[in-house]
Image (cartoon, rainbow, N blue to C red; front, side, top):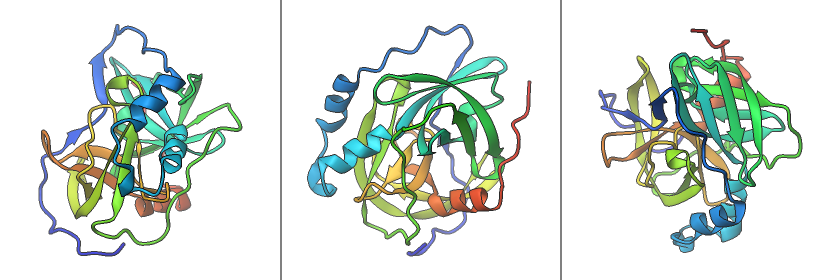
Length: 240
């Protein structure tokens, strides 16, 4: 990863999963046509290569609902290959039931394959083939380069916001120090686990928090995800 890292310091971070107590109403259905227009309407496409990149990124991003021991969380994730989805550990929590919804309104039951507590990452699986898939970037991230944050804030429809990489920092997440990409693209509760993509639509990070109310967005760098995948750094989730 290129560019200077910020000094190690304590950050007040706000996780971006939408967490509510149990007994919640069902999620609103996803309307693919409405979602496409809502996602693309406010964008300044000059910051990225084309609307096609954003459409493709939206199509590999999913909405996640996870019923835990005593609460239900909604967040986001993205498909790496058929059936394998990446999200945040704090989105799925201690899962009892997990479901994902795709950009075109399909819903699948899912299971949590593993979590990486030290990096706030989780991998889940669904029984499905032929889903649009993301590609992880392996080249260095550059400060100032344009990015887009994709997710399902509030558990509603897909949203895409654009910005740029501000720098890098380390901050405490779930009791561990996690390297993070700082961006000025707007992120909101429900964006947790969604992809941060570059101008080519390649995933460079996994969105997980804000530095504070109205602050910068934070994303786990893709090299941390690749390391956990390569080293089998995901452990089985714990029960209630």
